Image (cartoon, rainbow, N blue to C red; front, top):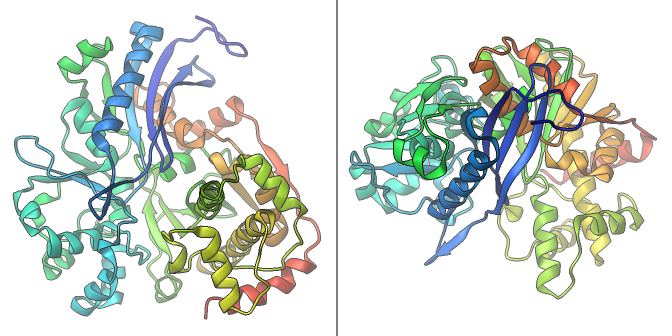
Length: 501
């Protein structure tokens, strides 16, 4: 079995990679030196309204995953070694002791969490919640979802035997494990950043039942073998199930092709529906200034933390595209980028993290209303709207970069953009210009590569994080964007800061 550009493939690993717009089953073709990526099955994902609530259709997603696993068995047979899943954070599934799912899991943009941050802080001071979690305050976080569940569906919490994050639920479906992997667990705001386990004292004060929280395991843990029936139906037999860094950003950061592992002189930007910008640090940053800036500390590989900021990301562009289509105007993302490039520069900007952009019925109109209320020119054309979104994101990246340098006391010399957004040339260039740092874009498949290489490491083929990143450099290409004129972005920075007051 040969793959162009690679020597004879020795082993195959499988990544189940679920994102907010789509899911995939991907094969990692390992030849002892490099890793090839082959997409076996792609399927759509997205929220589903059930009554007035927003949910994930996990049963359909699991059916699609099984289709991908079957395709892997047909193509690679006994060469397949293991499988592991990564997804977004914060959302969860509740299971009974007998393994029954309690309700269709909620989507993080569901409105039931409105007001829950304030409610939590009335019971436990904000500073104490930050000290007990190290996590940015966002109403989508699991902590606030559980407070909402306690208010709206308390019977389900009492019936539940365990809470599994989305990738942990997939692992349960694969092999029956009932554990939460560390990196996704840290997105919940329920985990102590120093003890690296559940924040029992805080959860008790908030009245959240403790019995639902399972054992926490580190990335790279072998969880078991495929359920016998699943192995037979798919043809994969008894392959291992290995927990990668199950939060997709943690997997992506593990595959940043830096040569400076262990240093804080580089930043990552995982660019997709969300933008997650941060640095890799040995321990959580819990200072009053980190709390004031509403930064977050999420778990990484080998006990590291990802000091970062969650930024609304390409959600703005995705939802504008959907709004245009609803009005009968269909564009692909390349066409939207071209229209944005032709629009006037830095004419109108927004705060991409304003609450009005979390889930508006029409994103384009939400952007127009924000500009109108802030007394800026209102973007009218599709190109003006998309350019506004891109430039606003780049200015937010510049702001967060400054905060990261302040908190670490280190000058950041380069920004690595990974994930699907690394293909967005206009945003990459705007980021280099706004931040006045070179941007290294790629690999696009960083999340899948991080997932797969942790499985490779679990099998004993490689050993260190630095070695993993060396494999990424050998296996994928990158593009560098150099900063251009700084003056226009300097002038826009003060305007941008004023939009957050």
